[in-house]
Length: 154
Image (cartoon, rainbow, N blue to C red):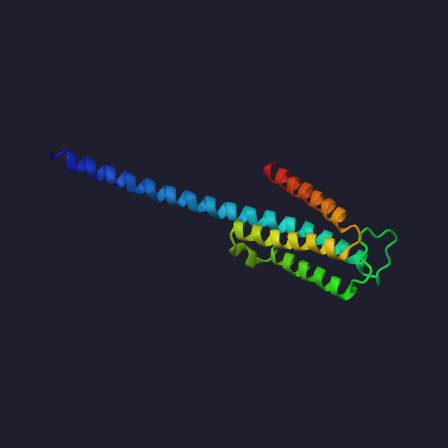
């Protein structure tokens, strides 16, 4: 019985040290994955912004584009369309700010989905051949997202 108490004390101390070390490791992993996902979404947001800027430039009649891919439907107000696109850009810029670091990956994904869904609806509502343009944009963004994944894995 006398030997049992020191053994239990040593086992308790080892368990305590192991629990502390596991806690430190998981905290570091959470921080690392949060930073990685933040940077990943910031890069993807930048790619989406480029697409939105291209759409905006095509629709804006004050800019002279030879072969505009995105053409505003007849009867749609250009100022309204440009304002909606500007709103998308403002929302996407958020993902590149420090404030975005405070959000979880799930929250960021949900907000990005809302922006992409809104962009898809915009194309269908405001652009000639909106359905086809929306499908093409979705494919380009999917390829860009997959390239980002491949780059981060390498």
